[in-house]
Image (cartoon, rainbow, N blue to C red; front, side):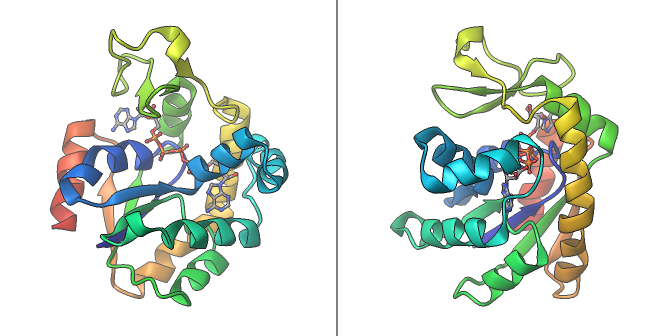
Amino acid sequence: MNIIFLGPPGAGKGTIAQAITDDLGIIQISTGDLLRESVKEGTELGLEAKGYMDSGKLVPDELVIGLLKERISNEDCQKGFILDGFPRTIPQAEALENSDVKIDKVVNFKVPDELVIHRITGRRISKSTGKIYNIYPDCAPNPEEDHPEEDLLQRNDDNEEVVNKRLVQYREMTEPLIEFYNKKDILVDINADEALESIIENTKKVLK
Ligand code: AP5
């Protein structure tokens, strides 16, 4: 099963993907994570992508499409995957269509902007496991006791100013994909303004 997770920054795409992949027996592919890995490794692609990412802009299509195609040709993708953060533009969606990959379902996570900003500013990533946490008590999951502060990282682009720019890019470049996949009759909406456990359950139901 090949699935796309659509939705604005902070909708919960990464958190939900991390919570359900084991059950579904498929893997999560986050183009954001792949790009951050390239930045960390200091590759040519990483150096080019960094400026776009830090300023809240989308990385140019040709760079991301190449990165994604290379990743999905790996052996571990054979049983299926959740694409978390790809496609983000119509040309990216068309490139996916023109490849051998068949998409079974597109899950569109809907959440209001004010919640996005709150969630994103409280988000922390575990350096040791890559797991997503949140330091605000009304967000979830919170870091457990075995995750001391020094293990938690805040992304460069997780501040209010950059999130606002990411939201503008989302509206302009990514939102048209809702119509694109609606026309193909494979898109399903999920209300992402609910308790995490209930969103996880609702997502599993629509993917059964
Ligand atoms: P990327 O890493 O993909 O970021 P994003 O799409 O902006 O999405 P986020 O990771 O911010 O949000 P999410 O929906 O995964 O939320 P999460 O689950 O963490 O992209 C970063 C950058 O890379 C882009 O700006 C761009 O520059 C570049 N890029 C990546 N892909 C690209 C592409 N295809 N083309 C071009 N450029 C690309 O949740 C957020 C927080 O909220 C967490 O702390 C979580 O614990 C909490 N939370 C989530 N759900 C709930 C809930 N229901 N209740 C309470 N708390 C919750």
